[in-house]
Amino acid sequence: MNLRLLGLLFLALLGAGLLWLTWPKQSIPFVAVDWHGGIRHGDQAASDVVLREYDAQGQLQLLAHAQDAYHLPEGNQTFLNGFSLERFRRQGNLALQAEHGLLRNGDQELLAWGQVLATLGADSTLRTERLRYDPKSGVIETRDPVFLTHGRSTLQGVGLLASVKTEQFRLLHQVRGTYVP
Image (cartoon, rainbow, N blue to C red; front, side, top):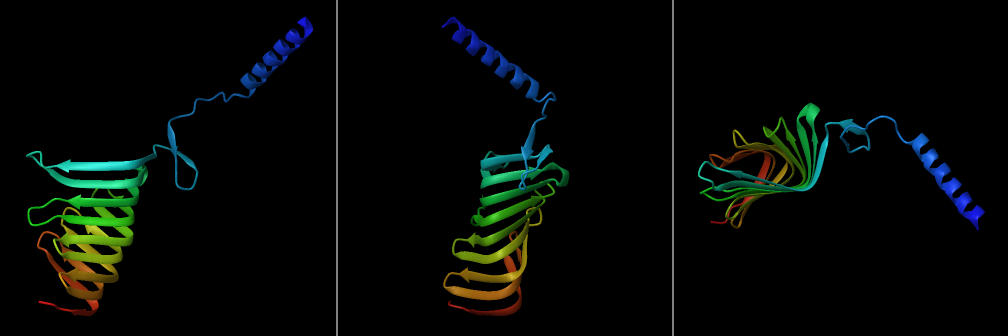
């Protein structure tokens, strides 16, 4: 029995020695895994991301949510998956939803794609597959087919240039629709 205990102790020491010999000798820096499975220094990934922006009076001005976010520091780009945002305004809230998004240059430009739905007022919606939004100028644009509703009126076209600030829009090509007063 004493030999068995001695044998088990020898095997345990041998296993610990092998583990020590095969353990990495370099420190591993803090990194994150990119979309393609590679590891790069400085990348950041997060799930269930919520962003709130307040005005000078402490009133909520913007609420954004993404199921997943992945930031690439070298291009100052953030990829979003399953995102929505809502901008609170006196004249009516602006809401935007899409399957995917990309914030470029920090927050200077938002590209959205995949079943994009924007609510532009109490009874106005915009549907498209892709769009670009410039938060500073308030300009929304797309070259894709667009479907707009305002009340019971509908408009369809290809390409859109719209201003959130002036609440004006222009369909660029192949415009058709139904106006219901």
